[in-house]
Length: 240
Image 1 (cartoon, rainbow, N blue to C red):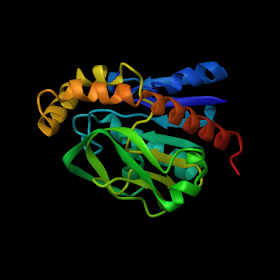
Image 2: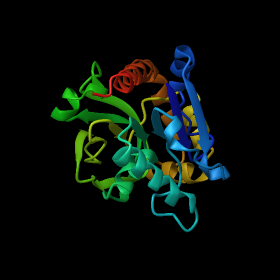
Image 3: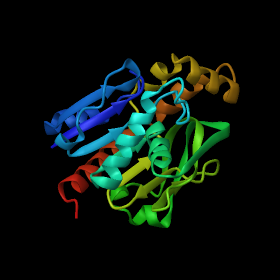
């Protein structure tokens, strides 16, 4: 199985999922679009992951590669019908590429917070074995406000109604993060846009508090990330 990973900033990589990819011997290729790396031909890959980043889906003047990325996502999901997983910005890009709509999250949703699976989410194979209420890392100032026409909402929170969704049979995306590693919060706190959103939302000492909350939740992150990874890989192997 070959996996293509699209990244938008160095520190938002597959994180904890990398350990499972290595353990499985999965052949995966990371392309960092913000550094000018080009999307390779899609036909040689079996699955596509799109990670997070500090830019917005509509920032095409500043980041013109977003246009090609959204076109690739649409080709992958609609035309090729192959397995897709989007996280954070990847969730928003899936919506935008498939005629959904994104808008500002006001105030920003940041912290280790509860995410509730919907009835459809509890029944969806991507969340098999995961708790109906999950603790997840949130760090976003944009949200999906209108899902694509063929989407099913799989998770929600009190601040954001579309926390996870499935489009068609084999495209999933999540606004939140469970792939968190011990160094994730520290690394993201070094990104000016992330640090600014954090402090304006939760105050000047929020980074220390968020580090503590993430550390206390790490066992749940580990368990949930492995379950989600295994569920996705099963979907790749059995795309019926």
